[in-house]
Structure formats: C-alpha cells, structure tokens
Amino acid sequence: MDPSVGWAAPADDPRNPWFSWEYLRQNKEFLTTALQQHVSLTVTSVLVAAAIAIPLAVLADRVSRLSGPILASSGVLYTIPSLALFALLGPLLGLKPRTVEIGLVLYALLAIVRNSLVGLRQVPADVRDAARGMGYGSLAMLWRIELPLALPGIITGLRIATVSTVALVTVGQIVGFGGFGNVIITGFNFNYYKPQIMAGTIGCLGLALTFDLIIIGIGKLLMPWARRRRAA
Image (cartoon, rainbow, N blue to C red; front, side, top):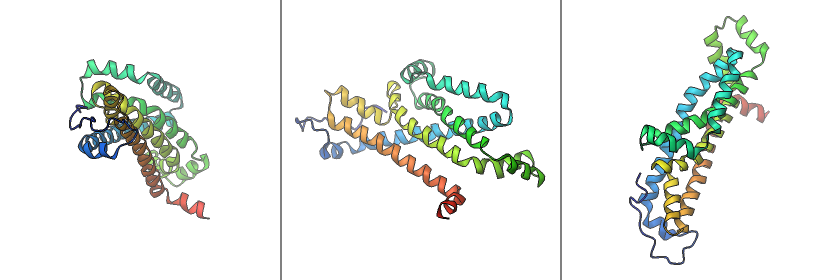
C-alpha cells in the first residue's frame, strides 16, 4: 500500500494536536485501507503459523527427543530482529504482502508451539490410558481427547501470537506493507504530524484488543465445560 494514497495533507490544522476528528474525516479511506491491510496480514499469518505450529507441538509431544530441536529452532527464529529480517526478506522475495507474511509466520511459531506443547503435556496420563483401554487409536485419541484438553494452552498461544503479530505488522512498513505502520511512519515523515501518528497507534491498540477478545470468545465456545466448571 502506497502510504500516500488517499491521504489528505494536514495543512488545515497548524496546531498539530495529538488527536483530530477533522484528520479522521479527511483520511477515512486511507485509514480504512490501512486497517484492511493490517487485518489481512495478521489473520493470514496467524492461521498459517497455527497450521504449522500445532502439528509441530503434537510431534514434539509424541516424539520427546524432537521437542528440544523444535523449541530451539522456533526460539532462534523469534530472536532475529524484526527490522533485520524484513530488510533481508525484501530483496530476496520482493516488496509484496507475502514477504511480510512469511516474516510474521516465523515470529508467531514460538508462542503457538510452546503453549500448545504445554497444553498437550498437561493431559493426564490416566486419561490417555483410559482412552487406549476404550479402543481409541492414536489419531482418534489426538482428535477427541488430547487436543480438546490441550485447548487452554493452544488458545493462550494463539492470543500471544496474535497480539505480537499485530505489533509486528507495523514493521512491515519497511517493505511497503505495514498496515497502520504506514500511517505512523508517514506521520513521522510529515514533520511529526501528531494526529496521524496517534490514529495509527490507536488503530494498532484497538486491533490487538479486538483480536484478543475474539480469540477469548472462540475459546469459550470451544470449551463449554470450562464455563460450567467456573459456574459450579
């Protein structure tokens, strides 16, 4: 997204306040485009990361000798500075949304893998033994016993990964696709224009909170037994 597309010059308010309804009115299209891009990058990246990380957590739980390498590998990826990673991926993959998504997926893996593995390891051994005694095969036990009981850990990992991804999307501005990061950086580049900087900042914070509440709600729908336990 070109950070200047649809952007109205802020010369009409020389006071440069931290918040301006007039700025929001004049730049509604620009901010809506940034919001759509931020949401798209976040949702795509977290879903892809979950599709990779949860099977890796299952593998680490089933094959204990692989848990160390899997956690170490995802941990190493997470320690790479985000600016350096996007600066490296840009020339290699081109300036396009997929470049940002790949970086975001790499960062989201650790939180989902680690918390999913914790959830799986908290499944009681006697529950697994009872399931085997009832004739559950490996796949059936995973789908009907282990994953449902590991959901609290998985949901926690998704919450952490999603909120972190919302923040990291802004760094994607370095390759031209940063959602609200484009808004914030454009504000800094235009003589430190505060209404624009604040609009991008509030957008990021609001998006992180919204996603977090949505995932909490999904968790409650998927774990009705937890609600009944708290009510009791």
